[in-house]
Every structure is written in structure tokens, then in C-alpha cells.
Image 1: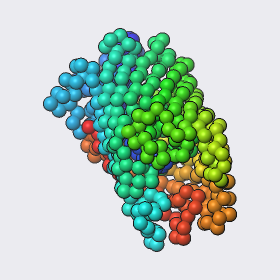
Image 2 (image 1 turned 45 degrees about the vertical axis):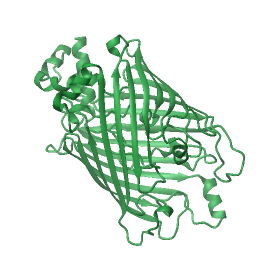
Image 3 (image 1 turned 45 degrees about the horizontal axis):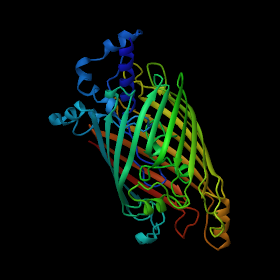
Image 4 (image 1 turned 90 degrees about the vertical axis):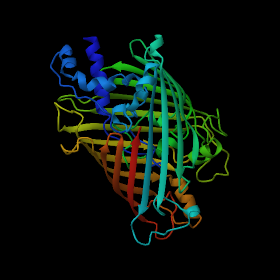
Length: 467
């Protein structure tokens, strides 16, 4: 019964990951997870019956790789069955025999404002994504080594690298460096999870059920010092699984630069610096409840968190003032499966709804409040069970001090940015996804704007390839 239950957990985890979407609106999207193959389980009502309903022939080829996927992150990357190379030539199997797993992916996106009179500019003076045709590419490789073979409970070493390129480098800039360098293990029958090293906490806290839904924005947390795919930082994360889906997760992390992501990556493109100027320690705590979709059990994830940063930040209204410490942020988010379209076959298929609220002090942060509503459907069509449709509406409130300072200088400024984004992401073949969408943005720039910049209608096209 214990063995069957564990196999069921592995299959549920793989099943849930079927779809991925891209990125945070904070900048270019860091890749989001896509589908991970899985074999649906039909519940028989008895633990030993669950394992019997799985097709041995179907699950055998890739089940052995499950333990080699990165652990401890909400951003679950697809397994080998959903890659373009799978196990061709037996290379993946040969590496698995010695405890090594790998996954690589390439995410490419393009945004272009479709409205006439879009105030095109030179690249150097570009103020927002899509003002000029904007292309971005992010490429990743993650390698894991299984330590459980030596008796360490769920033990794993994770090493990752990232390369990114932008035609407009303000959200970037271009870099080649580490993505993660981590050690993971569990204690007390998985009651405690420990992960430490150079981590990207944007994949460890908050998040969405199906990755970074296009249109979603984590800028309010990144400005507070949270580490990212492009800026991993030394951290120690500890998660306490209370039981029945309840958990509490804390992190002690070296903050990214208080001057922002661009300044941080420019000063540390490789990502191995222990500290950066004026950066201190970020403490993050998240409490939540998470349950997985099953027959007549709807997928649910509720979470709330706070962060406190000791870094020395500039005052947004007057950067010449002495820097101040004590920056912080808070957030609350929820995602819930509202309806299941295939409860007995693939229970994660259906319609979902969710929201996020994030906030930070307006004197030390350009974003003081962020609200988001999202509605998305996984496998809306029986003929396309792996596709994802998403509609995201968001509102960003800019710091009143920064806005007032801009107005006092005679600049054109706005207090809010509102966006509505609709996307369709299709699985074209194992490991290959393509997405297309439209994003209407009222005041697409940050705080200040120029004439003809009040509106944007971005065409967004993206591809995501796993190997």
C-alpha cells in the first residue's frame, strides 16, 4: 500500500504539470512550466487498486526519471516524456543509471504594439515592451544529482545555467551565468524540506498553479529584493508541511540590489557574487494550503506571505536623500479549480480562477500596490487536452511620492497602469509549445510617459521548447 501510494503521488505530480505559460510581466518572462507528462490514475477506492489501474506498459519508460526532477520549487519543469529528445539513444537512461538527470528549455517571445502612432523610438530611448518590436530569448539548462542513493532522504544537488538576450536590454540585460546551485533534502518523513545555496526564490514563493501565466507580474516582490532566474542569491529555505495540505515556508536570502534588477545583473552577470552594494538580508515567510486535483477534488492553492529587507534603499521621491533600510512587502494569492471537465480521466483539466494582491511602502518602492484577477482553462477542448487559455486583468498603482515628484518637475505622469491580456498556448508536439495573445495596456510606461504613450495593444507571440 505504501509503495502504491508513492507511485500515485509521482503520477499526480507529473499529471498536474501539463501546461506552462510564460513569464512575469516584471520584465520578460522567465519561463514557466509546461506540461509534464503523466499517466492518469483511475481511483478504485482502495490504495492497492490505484496502482493496478495504471498501465505498466505506459508508465515504465519514464517513471524512473521522476526522482531526478528538481525538488522544492513550485515551478515544476516537465519530465522527459514531454521533451523533444525524450530518451532517444538511451542517453537519459545511461545518465540516470549513475544518478544524473537533466532538463533544458528555450523560451523566446516577441511583443509589438499594434496601435497606430505608437511613438516609436530608438532602442536606447525605448520605454516599454512593444514600443518598438521587442524580442527576448531565455535559455536554461538544469542538471540534478540524486543523493538518495546514498541514504540521504530525497537528497539532491541542483546546478543550473541561464543565458538571456534582449533587443531592448532594460528588462534584461543580456547575461550568461548560473541559474541555481542548490542542495535539497527532507527530514522526518518529508515533514521538513531544506533547500540552500544560490536560489531563485521567484520559483519558491507565491506563483500560480500553471506557472507564470502570461500577464502575471511579480515586480512588487522583486523590487523588495526577491531573487530571480537571472539573479540567483545565496539563501536557506525551510518548509514545514503541517499536514492536510497546510504548510509554512521561510527563507533567509541575500537581497538582490536595492537599485533594481537591471543594476544587479549589470554588476553581477555571472550571479556568484556573495553581496552587492547596499544589499542586505531579505526574510520571507509564506503560509498556505495546497491540494491536488483528483476525481471530484478540485485543485486549490491559497497562500499569503510577507518579506522584510535590511538593504539600504533610495527614497523614490528624492534619491539624493540618505538611503534607508527596513523595506518590506506583503502578498496574498489564491487559485481554485472551478470546474472539472474530465474528473475521472484527467482531473486537472477544467476552468480555474485566481487573484493576487501585493503591496509595498510607497516611499521606498516605485510600485506601491498590485492587483490581479485571472481566469484560465486547461484542456478546454477534448481534441486539445494540453492547451491553456488564459485571461489576466491587472492594475499597478505607482508610488504617490514618485508621481508627485515627477509632476512637480513638469513631466507627464500617471498614477496607475491597467492591463488586460488574453493568451492561447498550444502543445504542438512533445516538448514544443507555442503561444499567441493580445495585451491592452493603459499607460504602459512606468510613472512618466510621453505624448502618444497612453495606450498600447501588444501582439505577443512566444515559443517554448524542452529537451
